Image (cartoon, rainbow, N blue to C red; front, side, top):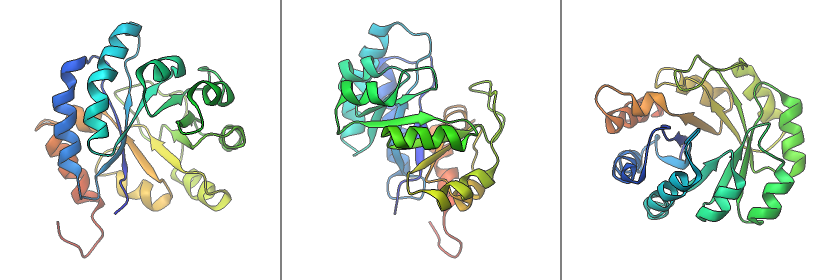
Length: 215
């Protein structure tokens, strides 16, 4: 079973987030909502706070075979010893990140709703591209609106993996996977769930379970 979730952390976290993260990752193990990778997303936090948090989260992820990527900052990904970096369009080039992090690092690029940006990222050596936002998000104001058909066309054009992002819930997740998303980036639907992140992961697992199968 291929892990489907790309889990984004909330912004206001610290090293004590290791325990909630471990619980969320464990909740998905062996299910359709198993987490493939975690993006450490601490917007506007000081560098030392990001590094301390990365240091705490790395062993949690490594013990479960889950990659930890740093958002925006290839330099901090390097210092932290993270598995990769996710770059926005204004966060430097794939080539610069590759030179800094090495051939084994995973590098992803935000491409909004643009095939052109995605093709450029792939040609530059990105390991995956991210499209979105597909739905309104309480985590980040989205200046771009992507449609599920974009995923279908992308899958027909290339084998480069794509991540769908933006307001994804258990209700909308199956449609995006069917449309062609390789991974689903989730944040608020997990961490803001009324019954906690474990219950949220369980809800994704039920939603993504192939029809006719039982959990």
